[in-house]
View 1 (cartoon, rainbow, N blue to C red):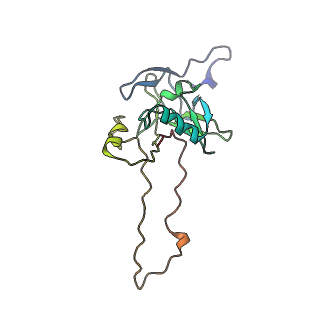
View 2 (cartoon, one colour):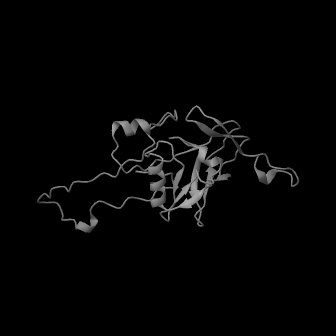
View 3 (cartoon, rainbow, N blue to C red):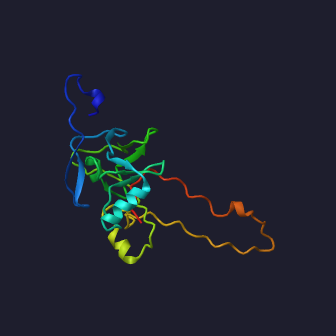
Length: 195
């Protein structure tokens, strides 16, 4: 039941609760049914620079497969571990029921993608950016355990591929260098793993 259909003087039941998750550590679970498109919670925390996030990760002995850093369009990061809230416990899934959206004011909110039933775990897809080498040990550390039918097996965002120039054939038109490999497309807001 959405808050719009609640009687005016009746309090709306909290949308979620935090408890242990079979996916990873703590998780966030629906306390009541949640409607598609419903704004569930803001991703809280202190906004810091990417450089500060990297320093914090170094102090903690990074890289970490468990991070509360959330990248913003302005290049900064929300550190959910610094004055954050329960939203930092929402786990990753390759088949999520929620999405994170950065509003125009730079705040991140979690919205339901479809009906979420009471007691269902909330999740969204957040491919983690790790700039270091994706070694087998790093891939194991960042393994995805969402259990989705189409699980990718990792929480790491794919590294951009370096394209080798194709040799020109006599009948192929020349392509100006400015039209080489394209720029990386901007992705939805996502937590960022230090690298």
